Length: 376
Picture 1: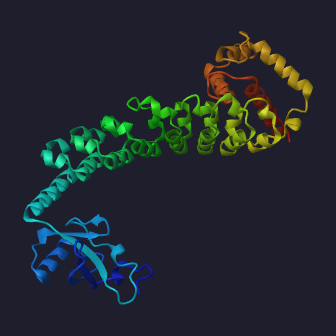
Picture 2 (picture 1 turned 180 degrees about the vertical axis):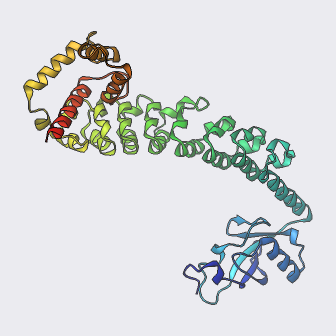
């Protein structure tokens, strides 16, 4: 009957067995639906079996219900015909009930704008309350959380998911915890380079691999040895192709590494080395024609090369902005600097503040192809 999803309105007043989590003994059976409030359900259980409602902590699997929650659709949606839904409960002592009541009130205060710093110390040590404060206020709320919260692995990972600025409040001990580091860089790879992170993790293949899988540019933070690690680099370029720029020269000359990078991001071709920029398959992956057809006019290429070397006033193998500016101003003295900057930025695919011959040549042929298309 309930094997398929049913609208909320179709599931009302179903039987719900209330089971003691400790003994597995059924306490009673009540009726409820997805929209039934937990505080109302607890009152019904209390009436049926005489346990004070405040001493009942209701659960569904690992989830602990708050009084303000509703039962929810998940309790009912997988039931077979004639079966009762099941909720478990833990009976709290009178003291535990008072503490839980206080905790719920603290959560409500935070929910309505109360600062974590204004709560009693007991509640500043509650992970759920601290995380709610971070989510509703900001990461700095964590400075008022107890040390136990700041040193709790799962709580701090949840905090980082809300805001990576929470890293400033993580206990020092956690930055030396492998599982925490794996979790942290899986949330934000570039946390690998945070100032509070021990440098040793940048040489740890497993941690760096997780970081690169989350953000390929994390490869920049890896040790020199790991930037020459094929598995790590492949993970990085498959996440972000242009991370190839941070790989070792050997791997920037590796056909399959470069091909993976270019397939992920065409712009990665500018970081290839040892003739791979002219490889037909790699050029095709980058959206360029075969090398023979793109460079078929050898005389024209030689003229471009000669012009490039003429412009390269300092002979470093690159054109900087001033060198291009001198060229363009010679042909058009009235050309505005912002126009020159736009042209330079278009050429500078690598975004490193200088234009190499391949970038210059590709730009010339791209412009030529555009002119020919307009003529057609």
